[in-house]
Length: 297
Image 1 (cartoon, rainbow, N blue to C red):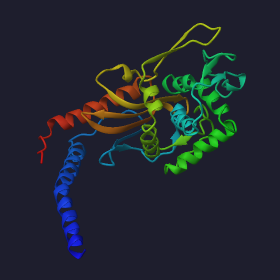
Image 2 (image 1 turned 135 degrees about the horizontal axis):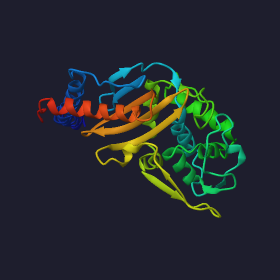
Image 3 (image 1 turned 45 degrees about the vertical axis):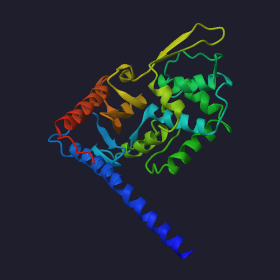
């Protein structure tokens, strides 16, 4: 028995010794890759007031600009709305009728989704995320167990669970400027959202057509034009806009097989957030191309 125990210990140490070098090489390569970007001679010239580039594998920021500033996040809120709806495991094929209760009485925003239209919960989720349809998000929260109040409470509870200490939600659409967060907190939300396949599918779809009974078909397009650009490898995407928040964009992307989260808040001008995202991509690609090739173990 004693001999068998000794052999087992020796075998365990041998296997550990064999696997450890490979793990070390992988970690070293990842650290070198992150360091290449961090040591790049110049930072990206971004026009967004708040910005953060987060290296998922290295678990550290590559670039920050006012990343701990608390600010309104507009429709970025809908990522959290979607997560709590999916967590509740409600039937996605259940039909939901749009109500006057779903109309925006705060900002008076326009919607092609008329009261009386009936769509499935899955379609509402798709449109809330892809096209940032406010009435779709409102209907999802209204039909959440316990109603809108319970949905918003769950959004705040989930934010707490994710460690989003500077985040607060007052409504499910993001139209309320009291929905606030920081770039650092939003990284945590995007990383959590990427684990939901329906969110990945909806936020990266370029367009979607719905056919409500008794109404003409409606074509909706993604509010992020980068999902229609083949040079971008996007896993999660969400835009947002109200006057108080400016133009906002969060994405989980792979840049040269390197997974990063991009957060851009308070961008003024319709093209600034997209321009900043392109500048980030170019900056990272330039840093990685000009670096020396890493040795493989």
